[in-house]
Length: 253
Length: 284
Image 1 (tube, each protein chain N blue to C red):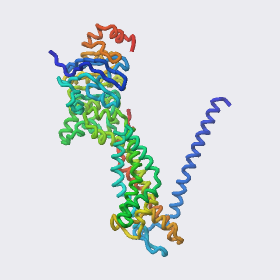
Image 2 (tube, helix red, strand yellow; image 1 turned 90 degrees about the vertical axis):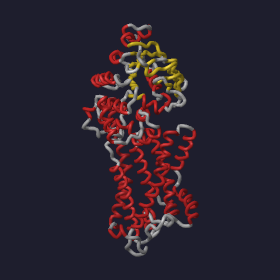
Image 3 (cartoon, rainbow over the protein chains, first blue to last red; image 1 turned 60 degrees about the vertical axis):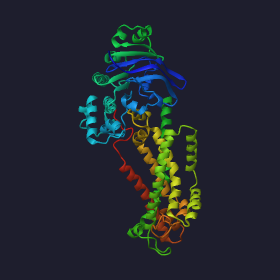
Image 4 (cartoon, each protein chain N blue to C red; image 1 turned 90 degrees about the horizontal axis):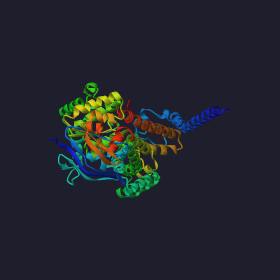
């Protein structure tokens, strides 16, 4: 029986009066890649931002419902959101390395700013994370260069390494390839396939071919509601809902 | 003339007008620098820079006391003004999005416009009267009241310019909010913050009115925080009003030294904090 790493129960989210997510309940399997697809504005990004409690950082934003990480509700009153964010990492659409830091310092940032000072441990963590992100060989001689001196694809892999350095259990990716060229995109998709052995990955994408390529399960959201969720091959070849079928055949969105 | 020819002519006229305005704006700066250098360079010498003032009606002596005084005042003022201004700016940027913040911001802006003589009177009535004498600390307090709102405002504005994606990235790593603000956002805003600090230091180094009422000026070197202190703007002021040519020449010399001091401070800090990592330098 496969284990669920993250699951949501009737998750609702608002931006002020705007009801962005309606009763969304999704189970994310451990060590799988789950894709969230849907047209612009359907709530995909809002959804994953609820999984690491980033949604509540927006002024006027709120949410109801429960989100479980390993069987405990991350929204329980006693939970410190900062600890959740260390266990659930995030990579954003536009690569955002810290501009005043070197490659090394960028990757080490999550550890250093949480108190780790031991140089050897930091060195090991940086090397390990850059290797996992398929970036080590390209930057190992340039660790002191500014993080922003890398190319777009390299910067995104740097951000992935930075997220991996704090040793999360889940990695959320919000359209990580939409600002990248096809070659860089392919590298990242390869990277995602290798990550899933150790991590649980949830990836938001507006590119259906990408979802079909990289994910094991896919959820289709439309106007804040979960329309269909299932194994990727089944959803794309044999969708159960008519709306899903219309979306994946390009009839709208 | 064809319409595209007319447009090109308008473009050239606008360019020419703009260029003219820039030149007109530069003229006062250029002429001040020229006058100060021309009149002051002859006063510069070893004795001038290293000895205290002599008798006011005979040539000789120098402005060493004034140089020391200005440096001490600037140092003390920065010690008071920079930490308070920085933290206020950070506070307003992070937590100032409400009525309380708007009120503070408004009062802060009012304070930047305050006539410095009024601030001088305030420092006089509180510190000089209670201590019983004109004093260095009174001068430092007065100058820091002038410096504070400038640093607060520029710090806040520099932080607000940092893109929210940077802050998002830091929060998503599970970094505590205050740590994210200080170590990531503030360092990213670094160059704007430093510019603000430099601007305010340049401003206070030359303020004269509050010094008249707080440190008074003296012929002696620094002798204690609660004693009068000499300063370059005061020397310039006093010497310029004396009827002796050599005294006025010393005034010009002091003005030249002050300008060099301020320029040197700007260049020095810029060089020292020039990093390879400033915002906006990427080759994506």
